[in-house]
Structures are given as structure tokens and as C-alpha cells.
Length: 334
Image 1 (cartoon, rainbow, N blue to C red):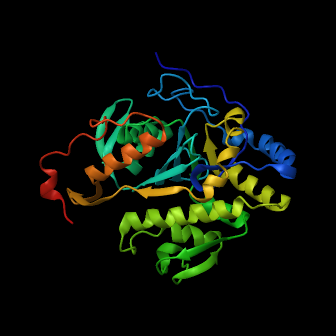
Image 2 (spheres, rainbow, N blue to C red):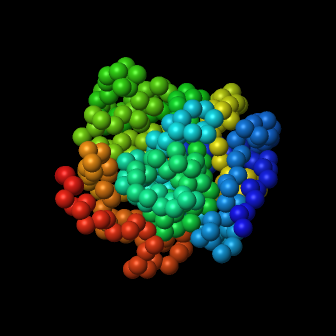
Image 3 (cartoon, helix red, strand yellow):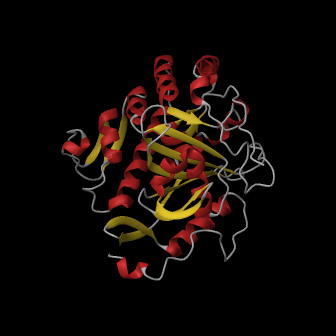
């Protein structure tokens, strides 16, 4: 019997930085933060169709006692986040004992099993959102890594521009030159510099001119994410806080509630030094369509890493991607 959607509760409007990393502010900003949180609550909180917990959990987690995971998704589909595709996907694990935050990026063209209510089929992972929204995306990522996804945060990708401007710009060590119409005519040269919202978004999204392709793009997205966190965790201005809250309320959806998010403050410092990883792989062409073929050995390594951080048993056999069809090796080009 299908579980009814959970009733929306007033969430703590935690600042889910650039695809959902949570920032909890304290001190003098606490009261204002709560006020602004309640003001934007209705727009941001969105429960999952599955209910309170993952089917891969026997019991609901307790954030004061358990390790947990968050799926961070940048959606390229408008401010309402009701359609489109995921332009960026990252899995974050929070280890209660070490306070370590681990982030694993999934290339947008990764060839995976899409898990829907009607069955499974192979496609690019960024298509999962178009097939069934965040619920289908979560089910797909859970199978890929063989772990439960406890929470999610989606952000309208253009909202990153608003968020960067809200924190007053971010300092980034630009790795490759950025230029051209595809980047909105943003021109950047390599080197450490302060980027505004438009520049940071162009730097994070540019893909075709990166010699490392999706892997390089994931590295740049993680750079921007870390830069936003570095700025946001030092905010001591109510004016900046107000701008950040507006950016969050207009562009982010999450299933995290007030009671849950208020327990995340111990991780704030960890957000400045989180462990960053990206799924490795190579080019794959099927029927003239480009895909990113995940390296099976590296996938097993990432599964083991995430399971270890979540305190789950690591086994030799995993319930993940089915073995590639025999003919895939004939169509793969490196």
C-alpha cells in the first residue's frame, strides 16, 4: 500500500548552500534567522512521496545518534523545480562520530539504471528527474550506490547566481579559461579571483570546453560549492543574511524539517573541509548518443566509502548497476 505523503511541517529554513549543504547560524543572528525561516517555510519544504524514510532503512534515523545522507541536486528547469533535468548531482554523507562530511559527484551523463514506479531501464542519470522528479532521482541514486538517501535538497541552478551575489561574491581559483556565448559571454582567465553570481554560475556550468569533460565540471562545481560555504559560514551581517534567505526561499526545495535541521550545527565547521570525490569513468557511445560509462572498480570504491561513512556493512556483492550488456564494449570509445 502506497504511503501517503507526509504533511508539510514548518522547516528550519537552513541555508542549503549550493545544492543543499546546511548552514546553521547562531549567536545574535539566531532570532532573526528563525523569523525569516518561518516567513519562507511554505515555499521551501516539500515532502517525498515515499514518506519519512528510505525503504533501505528499517527505522527512521535520529540525527542526534545516526549517520545520514543528503542528495544535492541542481535542477535546470525553472524556479518551481517541478520539471527539467538535474544539471548536477552530489551525494553528501554526514558521519556522526567523526563529524566528517563526504561529497561524491555523479557526472550528469552517467549511464545507469533509472528506477521508476513502472520498472527500470538504462539512461543518463540526469534524465531521472524528468521521468519522475526527485523521488525517481533518489531511487536511482540509492540503487547506484546501494545506500539509503535520507534527505534531499534541490536548487534551481540559476539560483546559484542569486546565492553567490547574496554572500557578496566568492573567491575561486579558476582552473581553466571561460569564454563564449555558451557561458553568457562571461570571460575568465585562470587564477585566484572573486567571482560574482553570473561568473560563478558560468564557471560551474561550462562543460564542452573542459578537457576533463564531466569530471572537470564536477571539480569546478565543488570549488564553487566550497567557496560559497566559506563565505556563508562567516556571515555576521543581517543584510547579507536577509539576501541569503530570500535566495534560498525562491530557489530551493527540501524535505528537511525544523526539528531535523536544528540538530546539524555540529557539522558547520566540517563544511569547510569536506572530503570531495567524483565517480570515474570514460566515454561511451550507443546509437550515436554520448554517455559516461562509470568505471565499475571505482564505483565499488565509492560505494564502500559512502557505506563506511554511513556505518553500513561493506560487502563484496552490491545491489547496484547490472553488468553492462555484452555489446557495450563494442560501442565504447575512449
